[in-house]
Length: 191
Image 1 (cartoon, helix red, strand yellow):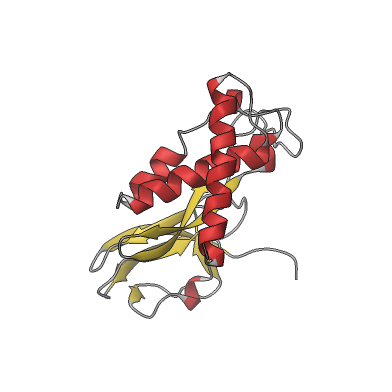
Image 2 (cartoon, one colour):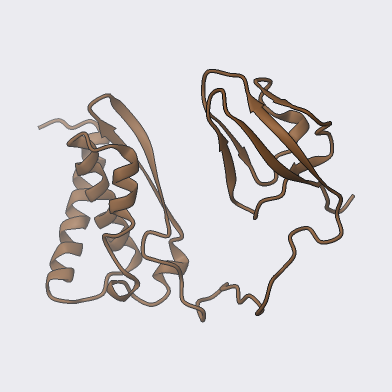
């Protein structure tokens, strides 16, 4: 039998996932390779069945818990990405924290202080109305310079030197035609 490289890769993934299923069945914790293979195999099968990508991401994030993987795996594998074949073609499926958040004692863990932390303390803030005049939704991420926005997004104030005042790693979605009032904060950093 002659297999394409993609078919061979899919069979290797399935084989590793089957090993993970056997280990799970007897209550053994999974290491990073078999845990990743298990989640990726499930994602590929859901995609093959035509399940919506948002639903696949939701289900994939609930397949394994931190108790089902060896210590350190959640910290070592913060993200899983796999190219899955859907009825309409291939799409990249991205799953954040597939085994739950790493524990507080995991290597590289961040321990936040008690209380409130002011976002971009001491920097100038302003309020602006952003209006998406385009035909598609526009995402604006936390640290994107607003003067470089999609031209379909219009504002009632000058945006140069500002970003959204939202936590790092988050984003705001403006639907087509939507107008939203947002708080902006002056860009900062070393020069």
